[in-house]
Each structure stands twice: as structure tokens, then as C-alpha cells.
Length: 125
Ligand SMILES: [Mg+2]
Image (tube, rainbow, N blue to C red):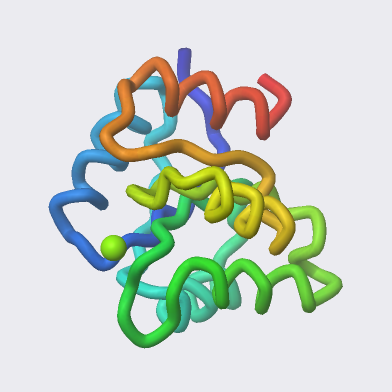
């Protein structure tokens, strides 16, 4: 099934961005934008209509948590669905991310089905 939603994937690892992009393509999303950190992602968001953000936590320049807090502080991004995909699997980290405004959480490594389920749910598909 093809979807016309625009997804922004944010990760400092180009390999991880490629994996996420390929997975998103496979589950029907062909409009995938990329950024290597929070600063770049804010730039991409300012210039594009994005429907959902899939972000890493650990990144240089601006990490995922700071990025999420920055988004949630802006009225225009208060409702933007945000999925965090990260290796930080401790309960404390997950709670911290959710408290900061992340809508859902995926621990790396993830299966395509897990990503699909969470992205679909956040987009109401
Ligand atoms: Mg990283």
C-alpha cells in the first residue's frame, strides 16, 4: 500500500538512515527526508511539510532529546508525531523521552514489522 505522507528520518549514522529509509519504502512510504542531527532536522522541517519524525537519540550538534524538546516548545510542532528509534533501552531513558514529548519508542535493532506498527499507529493508518 502506498502512502503520500512525508517522513523525516534523523540519525547521525548514514547506514541507519539508509536502513530506516529502505524499511519505510518497503512499508509504503516513498517520501522520506533525511537529516544527520537535530539542527539539520529543524532546517528540513522549516522547509518541508513533514507528517512524522523518526529520530535517533545520540547525535552530535543537537541530540534527539534536545531536538524533541525544541520541537515541543514551538506551537507549530506541538502535535507533530515523533517516534524515537534508539539503542537507549533503559526504562528510565524511555520515560525521559516520553516525558520530553516523544509519542512512541523503538529500540534498535528493530524489525520492519515493529517500525511499521508504530509509524502506522502514529499516523492513524
Ligand atoms: Mg546516533
